[in-house]
Length: 123
Image (tube, rainbow, N blue to C red; front, top):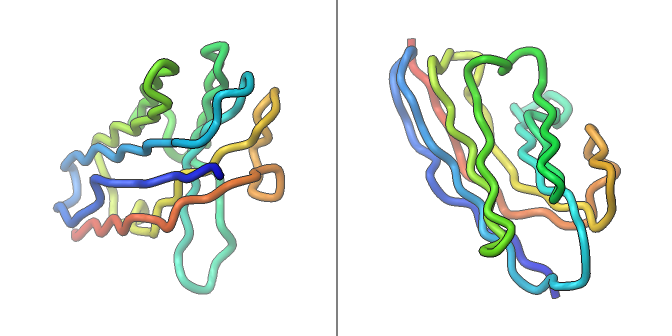
């Protein structure tokens, strides 16, 4: 059973930084995609960034240059360093995994989800 556990959410002021981490367990069968999504109440969930096990990454335009992924395939972890945070980044952030490549940049391609971690940015 694949399990994803997020950590690192919290509250910071605009311009600050946070680092989210996701640890995956239960998968040892081959290449896979890990990703971060976010959702604000009343809005659709959106992809933030994806990382495949070959090292290819993809970022939403709204976070390019501010957010950076780090992945450790040996530990099955994916971290998201978020800098220059804006109030518009406030959301519930979810870690997801897709047991295939290439990564889909949408939520219906994902096979497993974490429970989420809340990020709140105050102005």
